[in-house]
Length: 202
Image (cartoon, rainbow, N blue to C red; front, side, top):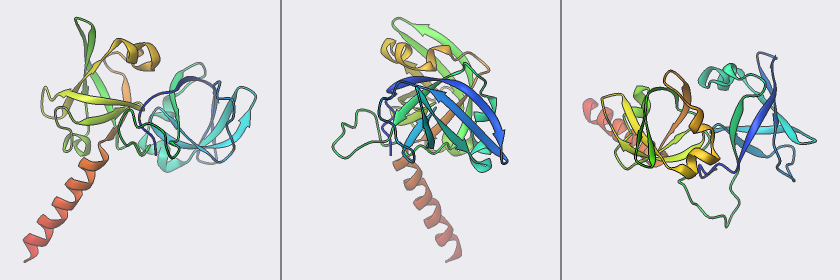
């Protein structure tokens, strides 16, 4: 479990196809990583396979590769990192599972006073539970849905701190991003759909 607060920006040292998936080597300054622990990389929960001097390796299995944009990563690309929550940690963002629900595409970037507004086209499964002022995770960053400008799209507002401490400042129109919809919204939607199916059969 994560909170969507990025604690470090890592750098891809190597991204190599392996056993149908992808082996990633990521440089970071975490001082006490251990093999087997979970790290969210651009919002996707990965298991540390090995700890290196100044980084770690992780294997992305084929099913995860199909649901993410990890296949696009190249050496020197920067990625948002967050270690898993510990009991007693502050929950400064929102509850994030590290499961990518879909890939969005940046459609518009504009400035409004001290904020940067970003419109993102989102897949249907994310759009169904995206509501204004609700939570969403974009490339591992806990954000608030600022608005729903058009059907199938959301708008996020990035404050200066977020722009400085994550990779979202680098995103331009046409870029793809990992999305995780609000966990509570997903469960509520699934339960309502299940009840509707039961009602249709009665």
